[in-house]
Image (cartoon, each protein chain N blue to C red):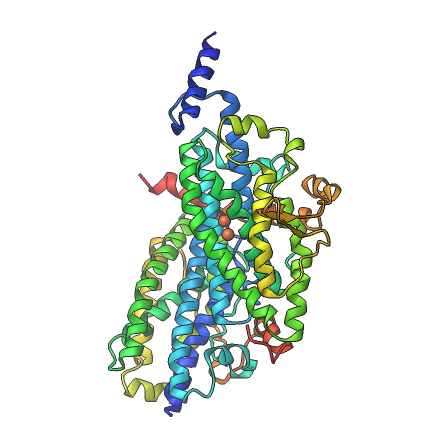
Amino acid sequence: MVKKNINYKFQKRIDNNIKIEPRDDMPEGYRAHLIRQISQHAHSEVIGMQPEANWITRAPSLRSKKILLAKVQDEAGHGLYLYSAAETLGASRSDLIKKLHLKEAKYASIFNYPALTWSDIGAIGWLVDGAAITNQVSLQKTSYGPYSRAMIKICKEESFHQRQGFEIMIKMSHGTKEQKQMAQDSLNRFWWPSLMMFGPHDSDSTRSERAINWKIKRESNDFLRQKFIDKTVPQADFLGLTIPDQKLKWNKKRNSYDFGEINWNEFWRVVNGGGPCNQKRINHHINAHKDGEWVRKALIKYSEKYVK
Amino acid sequence: MNKELFIFCLRLADNCLILAHRQSELCSKSPFLEEDIAQTNFGLDLLGQAEAIYNFAVEIEGNINTPDDLVYKRNERSFYNFILSEQPNTNFAFVVIRQYFMSVYLKIIYTTLSNIKDSKLSGISLKALKELDYQINHFELWIKRLGLGTKESKEKIQNAINELWIFTGELFERDNLDLNMEKNGYLLNSNLFYKKWINFINDIFNESNLNIPKDAYMVTGSKNGIHSEYMGFILTEMQFLQRTFPDAKW
Ligand SMILES: [Fe+2]
Ligand SMILES: [Fe+2]
Ligand SMILES: [Fe+2]
């Protein structure tokens, strides 16, 4: 009876677009859903540092090196905001990281694909940050206050990343023959995984409906995917690159692009650990965490002894 | 052109560049996320300093090269960073000690340069000094934490000091070029420089219960472009795109 009452009052607040704040009553399901989603997002920011960090020391100009280093640093900052947002719901960062290491927590599957050439750094900024923004702009209106505010802050930086990535793509696609080939190759490899970033079809997305009712999620997966495609195809045209989808075609009636079917076998395989880099990404995180253990211990010991 | 000032600038900028390279390698590998952000921040500071000084250097040279040419097209024997700067991130203690030794070195250099007549170089130095004060604070805090933390952390940081000490002699070497730079007010004389540097080190080591190693053989060579074996790998990685695709613009 009491529980029902909370749920009723809670849903009313949601329906009236009143933001939920950390000290407010909330149904356990809402809290759990948010912790899962926000921590997954935080892990994505942090794991996503790896493919790009991999290229900082090889960046081909001082300018691009500076931009990339600053970008990866931004992503670490995003991870930090998001872990903090999850902590406002009672989760602890160390538990969330434990779950990541035990493979109980997920992160964006896109980062399980390798960054093999310099133009992959362009494609990641252009497509991956581009897809992330599409998703995150809609999350600026999410019902949980701290998450919504984190998204507003993060989106500003993500749009820089997207432009910087696109700038690399311009240089590559307007460059030498080899650079053009590299650019096309990056698009070929990153296009479909970028579309997969929006998740399964709405009809196959088990948790979607509840999340939409709670206004955690504000737009559906398929809607956001379409929005991203419609925004990105003209950019590919501008670059003179071909999107690797023979079914891609402007549909006048829908005022949108029609496109081919995603390889859902691949999608589920990578989500469940079977991508080219899943093992590498987790091991990298585990190893860094292990290597840092003696440092964290010293920090704690020192604080106990000397910091009042 | 003023050839000596040009080389003097390269020596300084090369140190910043190679330290930034080592700091970049730490990205996504730090003991915790806040520290990852701090370390990459120092990398960015150093990269910015390197770029500003290369910019200044190419003007002196008469714009024959761009800053990118200096970074991506010079061979190992034409790089003048200290052997200390290229030492690897063996563990977190090595990072702390290498960066601390070099941060103090850079602070002393920039303090002198911030007072010279050339407004460009003194401007670069003033900006860099603010960044270095922050770095020095950060690393002093870590020296204390590790020196006074656990038995393991004390062992690790003392070991890093012992292993890196032999590379510190280069910081106070003076060749003819340096002596001329001293005369023109760009550089403190070696004794005074050393005194200032060792004061920093003594203070923080005393506070942290750490020891300066006994006098040892000091490695030398970088002023003539002689480096450790690490340098070749750093340049191979850093320069590979520019060298593989010499006609490409990035
Ligand atoms: Fe991000
Ligand atoms: Fe993101
Ligand atoms: Fe980003």
